[in-house]
Amino acid sequence: MGGFLIYFAILLIVPIWAQMRVKSTYKKYSKVSNSTGKTGAEVAREILDQNGLYNVQVEPVRGMLSDHYDPRSKVVRLSEDNYYGSSIAGAAVAAHEVGHAIQDAEGYAFLRFRHALVPVANIGSNFSFLLILGGMLLSSMNLFLLGIIFMSVAVLFQFVTLPVEFNASSRAMDQIVSTGLIRNNEERGARKVLNAAALTYVAGALVALLELARFIFMFLGMNQDD
Image (cartoon, rainbow, N blue to C red; front, side, top):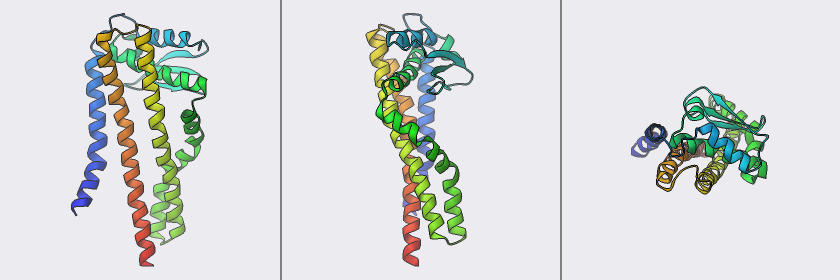
């Protein structure tokens, strides 16, 4: 019973804690202006141009922390606060998303692998639970196993995402420091924002792995019963 409670505590508390951490850190440093006075859009454009990525556009997008890089359209999309604002958080997030654009241009292996996994991972995320539930209700071990396989691909996608995100953050810090887009005394704040964001991916991967392990043990237990 104790192990069961610990499992569900991790499943619920870890993601919530990670989300609270990223939101509080972002909120803190989104109120601190960077010393150059450059907006997130200007930071992104400058780093892109310095890396020869003139074809990549920078656009605003609605929503809080909705920032992302679209590899199909070759567009860095920044939430409006980061696009128009000139905070330390905005500069860090903008540089991070440009880091993904640089990865794309260089053919970064983990990014390419993650892109290849997307179609199957989407299927796994959408249908794995249905297959597992169907296997349990119909007492079909084959259906249960198929659900586990689909879930495994989704979990693999989560773990492949980790080096992609950490590498993008590393590139971001290198770029904004070497180009002088933030000063030395601002590095700590920028790094805190990026590290807090990375925690959400770590938490997601941990929870996904625990869920997968639970269903694998269930499957093995059902096999033993048979």
